[in-house]
Image (cartoon, rainbow over all chains, first blue to last red; front, top):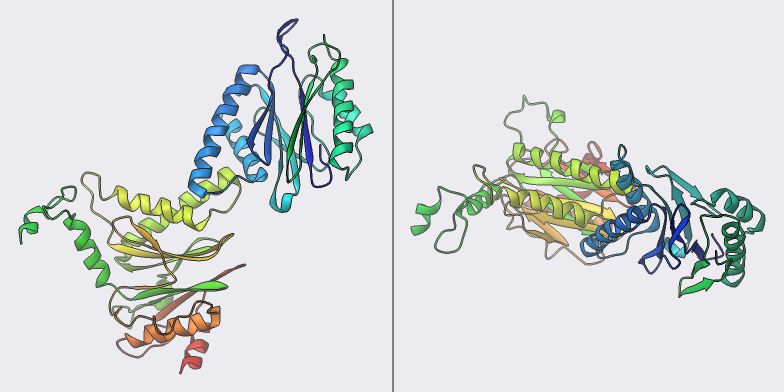
Length: 191
Length: 230
């Protein structure tokens, strides 16, 4: 979700296989660099593998170009990597959020074969995505500061995942401003 | 000289620690037509002689200065056909970068990849080094940049550089750090004129100008600049 000169990215913490819960502290949001975060929903192992591959690509990019990747560039890279596997895809839906040039917030999501969807307000992914669309649409306001953004994204997340049997066990929220990154854990319905 | 025994195989070092083929490639460059580049504060200018073998050759069909991307241009000294191969490869590499990142390739990255290609040909079997040195001029986020790439694959960033014949006429006296593009163009023409055999005109030189928002490979406008320089 985009705020005024900041953004927030949040996820739930459940890792499950249909009805069985494997973990209640699964990390789904990854930092690529201080101003770029990647959330990966979908198949757990694909999420981890793709994350590792992207970190690999980004580290080489940093060494070669002596700078961090812009979020737009990173999104193009993720899209290209996903499309490479067009006929045997990664079963993930990425959510990319970052601060670009002049710390302008950038968010996007894409499907599992790399079709980018840019948005100015919010993007959602996962099993509870339909719920999330509704919650975000009604709770979002433009140009929120980071405090208000945190409240909004937390409410939207918790209300949606509490209603979804495959998501839950609390939430993980990152609020990123040009100067700092705050990570908070939310408590929802622990089931 | 003991080195000559080692000049048959490219991939063998001579006792003095040189790869003789690369030395010879540099000689080929040194006897090629003069080319030069000057980096100004707001752009880069590259220029070259365009001496054709006969007056019957249609000079408009010959283009020594080539565009690699909308904001990077290149000029060479040495063997023309070799430069065409490199231009082709560089263009492909630049486009591949663009396809992946949806961003224009930074000048340094393109220079690095081109240099890597040139180096490959100094360490593979059955090939010879390229007989050209390239002057790559571009404009990206880091501003105007000018790089020279040699047959060995080494590259250097220059404020101003000349290659080919008659490069004794350097511009260390004329060059200033905050040169504007217009001054740089005049300096480039004056320097070309110094070593020029014959009468300089818009038909036997080529000038390329790279600024923040455009790459211009001039033609008839050269005549105007020549007039100013007179």
